Structures are given as structure tokens and as C-alpha cells.
Image: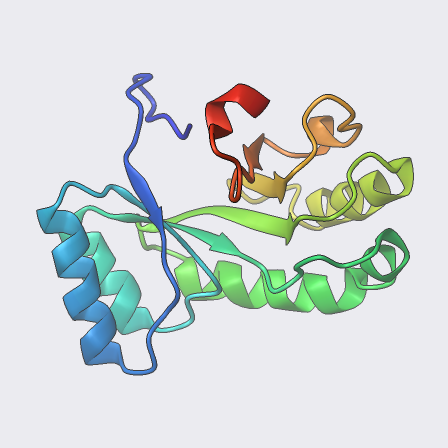
Length: 165
């Protein structure tokens, strides 16, 4: 579970960005009202949304659009992913709500070839103060966890997600 700097467990939600900015801002306000602190979503490119989240004290965990990609395609995607990551870093610059960035979702991290992708992405951002994660269904056989700051476990579809940890 995500934790704050003082070790407090953060309450979060996975959210799909709506089509309109006013609807998105209304969603963010409702999230804040019910105690949400972390919003995991896709790429947020809208400075108005960052400003709204900043004012509400919310933090975005943004997933890059690399979902369920086979390892071979993932390693071939470094240049495209580098471009997207650069755009994300620019858009979030100066916004406290621009939190960690997810480099991939549900990639086979049991294959060491995937680790080269994560290493390449980290190498692109050596001088940037930014946290990175990936989302994985693999727990025990994950060989790439050392390439990111943390791993988010995908427990969707499990009756007791805690049991797979």
C-alpha cells in the first residue's frame, strides 16, 4: 500500500479520466470529500487538473499507456516510452500532485529481458527527482523489482487480494 513520508498508509482509488475537465474536477472534489489521498490514473496532461489536485491535496499516480505488453514489444518501446515520460515530467513539473509514474502495467516481470526496459527508463531520468513503479500480477517470481522504487500488486479478480502478498 502506498505510504506517506511518515509511514502513514494512504487511501487511494483507480480512476479513469472522464472526457471533460469540469467532470474530472467534480470527481476529484468528491474523492477528497470521502477521504481519498492518492488517485491512480492514466497520463494527466491537463495543467488545470494538476492545479485542481494540488489545491485538494491529492496525488496522482500516473500509469504510462503500456498495458499487458509482451516483453519483446516492451523492450522495443523504449524510445516511444521515453517520449511519453518526458511529456509527463514536463506536464507535472511544479505540481505537488504529480506523484510517482507507472512505467508499465501487467508486463511479465518474471522475464529478465523486461528489466532492461525499466533500467533504460530509469537511465533517462537520472537527474530527475521522481519515483517510479510498475503494476504486476507476479509476486514471488518478480525479477525486476530492483529497477523501480516500488511495485503495485494487481489483486483485481482475487477474492482475498491480501492473500497473494
